[in-house]
Length: 208
Image (tube, rainbow, N blue to C red; front, side, top):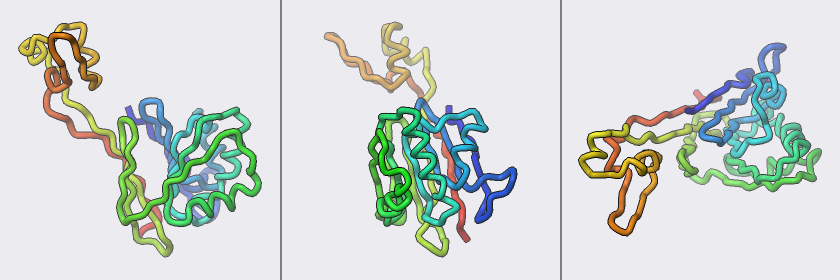
C-alpha cells in the first residue's frame, strides 16, 4: 500500500490554512518526503504522521518556498533521537544548498547522504520501489519525481499445484523469495501469474 499525504501546495507566500509545498509518501515501512517548504514539519504533525522515520528527501529545485523548512525539520529529527542516515536527492548544487541551510542545524546525531541528479532523467533504485527524477520547464533547474512500485502477478493455486509446490512454501514464493532445497529450487514464477500494472505517484510542480 502506498500512502500519500499532500502537506502543502502554497507558493511564495504561506496562507493561514495552506502550507508551502511538500508531499509525503509511505510505502512498506519507508517514508519519502518531496520538497520541504516552510511549515512542513507542522503539517506533518497536523496529519498525525511523523518526521523521524523519513528515509529519503527529494528536492525539486532550490527556491525558498520548496526548501526553507529543512533546518527545522532536521533539528526535530535530531531531537527525536534519530540515528539512521538521511538520504537527500536533488539537482546540481545539492550539498552546497543543504550545507547553507544547515548553518542553524550544524550538529545532528545522524549523517546526511547526497545523490545529485546528473541527467535530464534519472532513476534511483530502492528495495521494492524506485524514484524517477525528470526535468521540467522552470526558470531555474527543476525536476519532478515519480515514485514507482512494481506489482507481481497474482498467486495462482492451480499453478502451484501443477508445479507440485509444497504448501509451506506458498507464502514465501508469493513474497518473491527463491527457495532452494536438496531436491529442487522453487521460484516465484512457479506460483504467480503475469505481472500486474504497478503503482505510480508523480509529483510535478513549477513547470510550464
